[in-house]
Image (tube, rainbow, N blue to C red; front, side, top):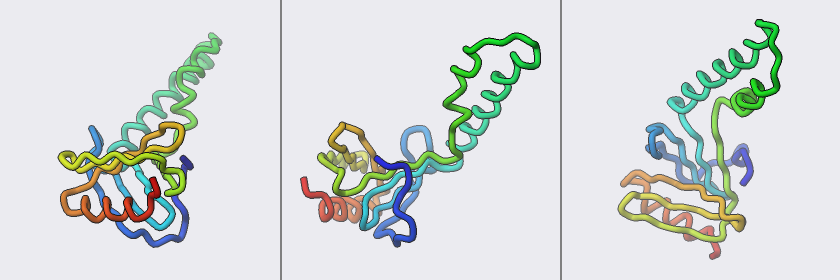
Length: 137
């Protein structure tokens, strides 16, 4: 999976839906593939973690005590982005699972990586039709 959707492409279908604990995830299906972008609620929690990571990192420097463990435990927060983006090209998709009760379409690549498209009742049929049109599994 790559980290960014194709730029300047008009999507076939876009929607916002809940996925697990995050109630504001943006989903998109375009001619190149499917994408999932975590929303502002997730971003707020992530930013709080980044601030905490800096405090943990700079604390030993301020006290004069050095240690390599401070950076190791916070490196993922320091290198984080404000949004979490996933994009899977149609040609990468090797398996599709559909859960009609939950309105979820799961796309898997050859390495078993999963990207889940959580649909609203209004977008489920259209999203499933577009996935089936573009995936050759």
